[in-house]
Length: 506
Image (cartoon, rainbow, N blue to C red; front, side, top):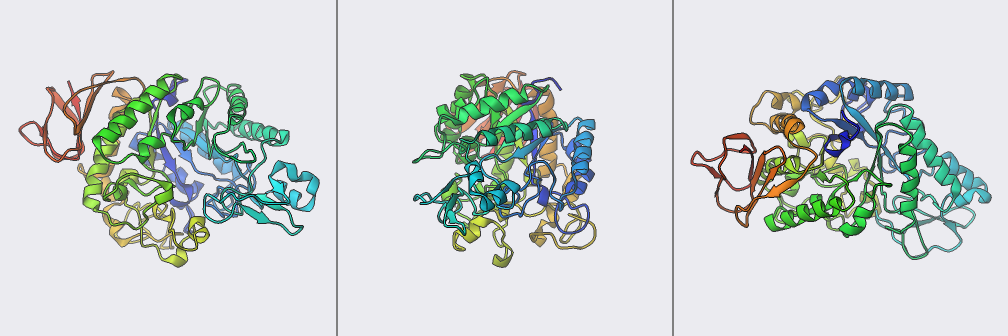
């Protein structure tokens, strides 16, 4: 790949605990991931992004990092991580890892030192009087320690926030970036990227955060072909684009598109705004339908309200899964046809729905506990993948050991094995689209086509035309020489049914 591979890459998100279990303990690990690398190669992705794999008490699924330079023993060893990186590279797959700079873990050496020695507390936010900030996970954002002071945690109490006014924090993360770049990692995904800098009254998107990323970019530029990817949830797209200026991050997740309802005008507006704001800074957009924090797209698109909002998750809301599945197939072709990069969350390619009926005693998301057991949280999109067989654990690991979250028995129809040979399956759609995308789509631009208010249609640089019908009635396709790929059946008289997308050869 060229040194701009990331501009049009298809990146597969691996939530390691739930991807594949290599040793039979019910938890996904590096051994399982390494065994499944041929699957990812066959699927047609350019890169994988792994959620945190560091030593952690798992107060928040590994986002409470105790040591940024090692691997959680449940997942494997540092040597095994280095072998995984080499093996992925041998298959032409780049590797992006998560770095969590907003907060640490109460189990980290720094925080434990701070508890023992007040002179070491300037690496975190300690104070004698807490303010009224609330945790993003629910409840107060401050916890008191034994000597009476309080520490800030915008998330779980096990995740104390770093104080980025401290030069030691800056140096620590520069060293962490170099540690992993030296081991061959191709990119860093930055968790909660807009939250690092705090004032007395605010903690999101303050101007000082950009100085941090200018420093990170200088570190990345010391190496060949390394990238920085930001997790930036901001409603203001112009402020969002500031993170993508040429001396800051290379790309950032496009949550405006992910949150958008399945409505033609809203989607058209989101796509147009995304393209225009990215163009001003010369950065490629990314297109994301789901991840480890949001309800799975098949379920979301089957609900009456198809938008997404963290503050109003609607966990357990009724969903027409047949409708959601049809729309999710169309959305996949839409996202993959747009200019820029695309992310695929594990299981998305299998059409997995959200699991809403996890027994309460098995839920592990801190949102569940911090909300007083009123918000189920994110476990439903983190259920381990079904690989093969007719009953749980569906080949997730060797033997019949129970995965860390239970899999629905009805997933026997959605296993990778069951779908691999089915030309009508979601897996086949994704694999075909990703391989076509490598040659014909990715980075570039588009030209909108006017096929009516309920239709999204555009031509890409290569000539490929994407048409998506979001209206109630079939619509006539524009002139074309062939249908390259369709998300569902098309009418023989040249009409495209509702909630269906096609890629056309002009």
